[in-house]
Length: 504
Image (cartoon, rainbow, N blue to C red; front, side, top):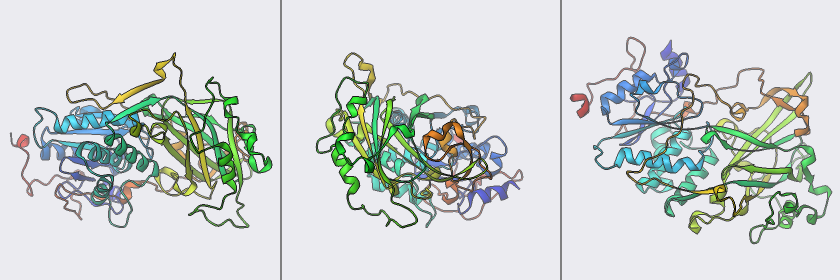
């Protein structure tokens, strides 16, 4: 029965040539695997932890260690992997807090290439499916520590992890954006400056009815995404009805900071508003009679929205009112960006712009649970106006983060509760299309009532793991799965030589 469940969850995935496990060798020293589990029912359809450890012990002796990225919990205690594990958790379907990147890269580098390190060591990266978060970490390492280009790293991860015809290994737009950030960070001396940031306004073109808009960011060292503000009807200005661009150019008047707000060179509020009447940008679809193009709207909070880091997420959810206390979620989308990189910090020796505008089209935003699926169109494009919270009397508002050098201690994050791999403090992870119960108390957040997370029926299989495959160290593929008498993947020892540690 367990083998049947694993085949159902794996879908078109192939198994490792020797162990029948869901893992692949991205390179000779980087292994990507889906998250193993020591608890039921997960171990019935995931890699059993003991089987993974058995394989790694046989192939690599003591020369392996795990880097895990699961904010939802690993599913096994550290002791079951000999304590050789590093924890850098962040939520599924999202990029990491960029402040984690220098420590992740340094810790992997020290394990693989530090002084007095034996040859043949491997890093094992895993998240849930061994795809998005694991791929982000693996590709970031190849770029920052091995000198690979972005294109080569992404192509290698896709070739080794994905089956032909099932898309890219890393497909979430915000994670791809982060890999671009890593490339720029690497090329400019690996200097990163963390700052507190205020979201001043959100300009939306083509906003449809019933859209809830939220500003989110990381807290708890990146393990949790917190909603810092949800806009109400009183905080939005429909520009189409005003007709005067000067009416929306007073951001500084609503800010709690003494420093007047200055838009970046060449960008003004007037230009943002005027562009709402510009011809549609491709690939924006043609507006139809059944789906109006929507309005040009400015969201401006009645109180300052201050985020603790450069990482900002803007989340959208569209709802249509149904009957009998139910409402229908028809759109879900979000986008992450980092103001240090959007302010050209790497290119200016860490001196990033202190204000700016981030723009993106609807079609380029992240979809539901890491997919491209977003539902019906909720808007055409957005522009987020931001600025850094600065105060000469409070230098702690920003701090420089560099990659630890070899021999220096590398900070590690606290692991999430391993006993509850389905646990999450993030409402966003459960977002999907469909019916929800209506909550009158939050009806002010959109023209339709907002909702609590209560799904009528189980969601479909959105697990990205169904499209991945396994590769051996030399790129070999495997078709069949071999199980032992306990219905666990069996390590076949006749096809290759054991490691030196295993021999001894």
